[in-house]
Image 1 (cartoon, rainbow over the protein chains, first blue to last red):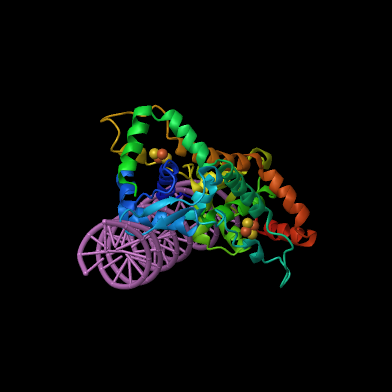
Image 2 (cartoon, rainbow over the protein chains, first blue to last red):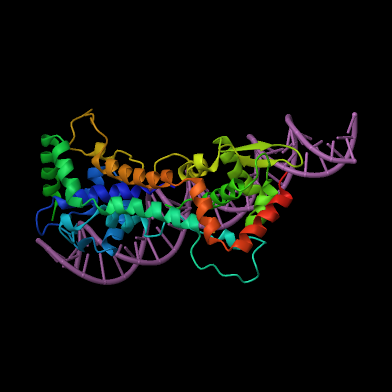
Length: 162
Length: 162
DNA sequence: GGAATTAAGGATATATCATATCCGAAAACG
DNA sequence: CGTTTTCGGATATGATATATCCTTAATTCC
Ligand code: FES
Ligand code: FES
């Protein structure tokens, strides 16, 4: 059970977009360069964010991406689910129904207890991600990343933002 | 990010083994029949449980599997990790190091804030699973599964247990 | 001792999904 | 109009999940 690397990419891209001044856009090309990622494939991750309405786009030169909402209105789960999908990590194939001791056509009233526990764990994972806002991440990063790197990164970004 | 179906199989098999009387073994063949699963492939899942020391085996006719510990000493996480592996679901490829604004050879003191949050969610998932014991599952199942099915299932099992 | 049964593990085949690239269409900008 | 950009579709490749087969060694029963 491994998350796609697109998740890491999307989260880092959102962190950068969160630092963009009002009304500016940043292109896939710039985001790919900044993170050392394959531009074409990163583009798919950004498209996922776009379809989830987390980012807005504009075409043409000086086009690109910007956040669709303030960073305090976006949580980790939204970003992760945008690229990873909303499906639960555990899928029950209802093997209990194959028990030869069951009466023909017997129908279960509840989902299997095994599945319920696995789904509960899944929900705990989602809850943790739901509680972290993009603005929290930006706050932590701005404290932890050395201020000269932090500053020069955003200069680099602004030079390329349309 | 999808768990293998082996996880469902392993959990259900453990629940059955937990109901086995002291000193008896149940074969792959019986477990596969009971759950309607491919015997050869289920065998791989059971081997994983064996390597994790969750079950013990014996060879020959009347051989098979039994739990290596009482059901109250086995939790969900152990079983899930046995077949799914212990690797974290999020892997950081350290893309922050590709930032062209970084000084040459700069070394980070901490893991990335993004990764720490993702790992925290992962830990919440594991914690939930760690808190549920196999004996809890058996308790729930014995309450929820209609008593005639429950009873006939274990009669079916005992007839095949060596 | 010999036949049957079983778990363990290696080899292999297939399907599904993640990763990655390429291209054409449509929109925006100068 | 030409360039730059997002977007979607098509396609290729690699890794992993799923599944089967076969050999070996241990155990039981006759
Ligand atoms: S039948 Fe699917 S988890 Fe129990
Ligand atoms: S560099 Fe990997 S999560 Fe930030």
